[in-house]
Length: 457
Image 1 (cartoon, rainbow, N blue to C red):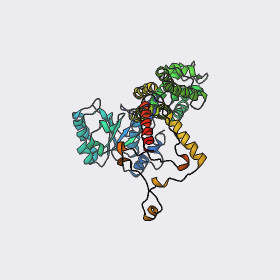
Image 2 (image 1 turned 60 degrees about the horizontal axis):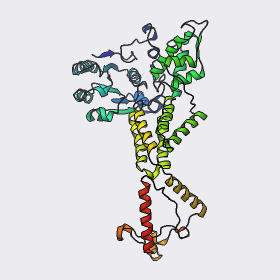
Image 3 (image 1 turned 30 degrees about the vertical axis):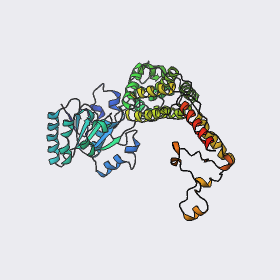
Image 4 (image 1 turned 90 degrees about the horizontal axis):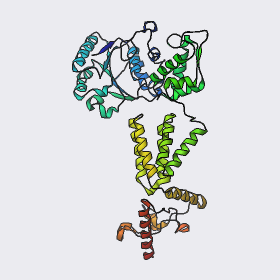
C-alpha cells in the first residue's frame, strides 16, 4: 500500500496534520517538533546552507531526482517533505517495505494526473534499497518522461543497493550523522517551544543531562527528542503543571535512556587518559585491555574515526615492518568503517584492534625517520654525490653528473653495493630492525647486503 500526502503534510511514514493543533493528542515529541521549513532544519549545512546544492535547487526550482544517503534520524524524510513544500509539489510517500509493482503503477497513474495539470509530483521512496531490481526498473520510464521527481532515502550505500540505470538518473547526496552540538540545540528548542514542544511544562534540564542525551543519541534526532520526552515524564512535576515545574537531571536522563553516563570528557583529562590506555594496550600486545578501552570510548560517544586514525599511526609507529600488513589492516578498517558506520562498524573496529594488539612490534622505522631528521637538522643540506645525480643535459654530464653510477639491475642479485649517502655521512645507519616478526627477514636481508658490499669492496 502507498500513503499519499499533499505537500502541507510534513511528517514521515503516515499521513500527518498540517498544523500543530491538528496533531493527535499524544503525538510523540519528535513528530511535533519535526521541521517544516529549511529555516527550521538543523544540521546538513553542506546541503542546505546558503549557496549549497539543495538550497539552490529549491531557490531556482530546478529540482533533480535525488537519493538521500545517511544514518537513521539525520533528516532524510523530513528534508524530502520540506523540498516538496517549498517547491509547491504534490508529494507521495512510498514505502519500499509495504509496496509492490501494483502499488508502483497506481502511484504513477496518480502522478500522471497531476502532471497533466502542470503540477510536479515528488515521489518519496523510503528505504529504496529494499526494492528489488525489477521494482527499481519500473521507475525509469517515468523519471525519463518527467512524470515524477524521485527522492529516495537509504541507510545503505546506494552504489551497492541501487541499480546502475536508476543511480545514473539520480544525484546522490550524503547526509551526516547529527553532531552533539546540533542535537543539544534541538533538545533546548523542544524544551522551550510552547506551541509544539514542552515549553508549557515548566521544565529545565541540567547541563550534564543535556550533554548526556546529546552524546548518547547516536546522532539520531528522533531518538534524542523521544528520550527527552520520556525524561520529562519521569520528573517529579506532572507535565503541564506550570506552578512547580521540574528538573531533568543526569540521573533522570540515564533512566530515560536506560544507559549510564561514563566519565569521559572529550576535551578534558579523561579523554586523554582513555586514549592513552588504549594505545598502550595495543603497543603492549594486550588485546583484551585494548578491546575494553575501545568499548569505553565507543560507549562514551567518542568519534570512531578519531580512534581509527590513532590506530593507523600506531600500526606504523609501533608495529612497522615487524608486520607490514598491520598498516594495511588499519587503513582498510578506516575505509570500511566510513562505508558501514555504526553500529556494525564496531565489528570492524574489534577486528582491527585485535590484529594490531597481537601483531609483533617494532618501532625501528619510527626511530629511523626521527634519526634521519635529526641528522638533516644537524648537518644541513649536504651535497648529493655526483654519481647519483640526474644528468638530463650535456652540460650536466660534462660536470660529472651521473658519472660512475652503478645500475643495480646490471649486477648479480640486483645489488651493486654503491654508497648513496653524502660523503660526510657515508656508512651512517638510521634503520636498525629489531629482528622479530617480519623484521627477522629484513635483518637477514640487510646482513646479506652488507656481506655483498664488503665482498665488492
